[in-house]
Image (cartoon, rainbow, N blue to C red):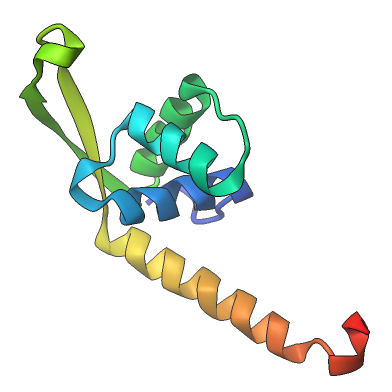
Amino acid sequence: MKGSYLGEFEEVVLLTVGVLHDEAYGAGIADEIERQSGRSVSISAVHATLNRLQEKGLVTSRMGGATPERGGRRKRLFTVSVAGSRALRDLRELRDNLWNLIPKTAFE
């Protein structure tokens, strides 16, 4: 696996692949990120990130069926791999631990 560090956008894309499950493809991922975050996301940034995640072994991809809406073209569908699931669990645990260490008075 090439590098295990995940940047913020890589983490968001990986989480979104998990959310969309069997329907995770570039444009759908960008749309969901925009819907959830209110952030505008370029499709090229999503594709570049998906390629990096695949190189790191955190997602796998397969070709879906052709659809009339896409002019007969097929979608590349992404799935979180076992290593990707592990990475997300580790990140969540780290974040939860850090949140739990913040003194209660820190946000008053």
